[in-house]
Length: 411
Image (cartoon, rainbow, N blue to C red):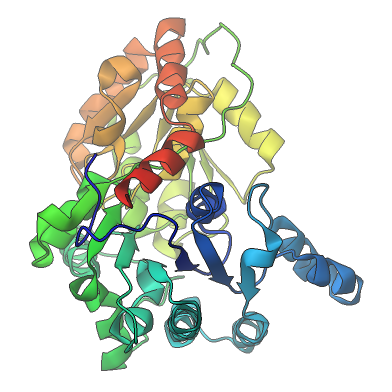
C-alpha cells in the first residue's frame, strides 16, 4: 500500500500521538512502538510505575480506573500523562458539568502538549480527531507530517441525521447527552475543521471517510484501517434454539435503539422471542418505550463474564446505529460466534456480508428492520453454521492486522 501524505520518508522518524483514556486499547501507540516510531503518547492518566506507587492514596474507583490504563507493548517511558487534566475532568463531573462541555474545554490541552513535544523532539504528529487542532495549527521550526486519526464521522453528518430522526420520531432524543450545551464557536470549529490541516487521514470505516468527503475532504489523502478484536476461546458448536436478540451500548438516539424497539413491537417473532438491552445509560423516552413492550429486559451494565454468557445464548446481536464511526461491539459479538444486525452507517459493510454473519438494514427504516427481524427469527435459531461464519469473520480482524495496516499507511 502506498504511504499517506506528502511522500517524505519517515524511516527512523518518530511520532507524537495524543488521546484521552484508553482509546482503542492503545493499539495505535503500540503499532508505533513496535517499529520504534513512538516518540511520546500524551494521555490523561496511565498506570506508569510512578502512578502505581501512589495509587493507595486514591479512592478505590479512581484507583481501578488508572490500573486499567495499561497495555503490554506500550513502553511506560514513552507515556506523558496530563494528570492535572484528569483531576479537573473528575472535579467538573462531580460539579455537574456535562461530559461534552468538559471534554471540549479540556481537549485543547492534549493538542497543546503534543505541539510542544513535537517541537522539542522534531517529531511528526499522529493525532486523534478531537485533539488535533492545536497541534496541527501550531508553528514549527521543522516540517512535521500531520496525520489525523478520524475515528468518528464528521459532526455535520451526525447533526443532520439526528435532527432528521428527531423530526420523524419525536420524544427519543438523547436526554443524558446534553449535546447542545456548548456554544463556543472556536471549540466547535476545532472539532469540525481539524481535517483541513492534515497531510493524511486514517479512518476506521468507509462510512467515516465518506462523511469527510461530504464535508469537502480530498478522498485521496484518506485510508481506511478497520479496528481489530481480541479473540476469546472458540465458542461451542451449538446454536441457541430460540430467537434471543441482544443490544449492548448506550441507550440513546444515535444507536437507533428506539428503531429497534419499535420494530420489535411490530414484528411477528413468536411468544418466546426475547430482547435484552445492556445499557449503563438510557434515554428517558426510550426507557419508557422499552418498559411497554413484553419480552424486553433492560440490564444496567454487565461484567465481562456476564456478557460472554449473553453472547452465547443470543441468536443475534442488534445495534441499528444511525451514525457509527466503527462499532467495535460488532466485532466483539462476531468474535463470540454471535451474528450481528446493523446498518450501513457503520463499519459493517467493510467487515463482510450475510454469509459472514453480518446482516444490514437501512438506517432509521423501522419497516425494513421489522421485516429483517422476522426473517432472522426463522433463519438463525438452531443454525450453528452461521455462528461459525461469524467467528471466522472476527478471526480476519485481529489487532495485529490493525497495527500492521496502520504502520503501512505511514511508510
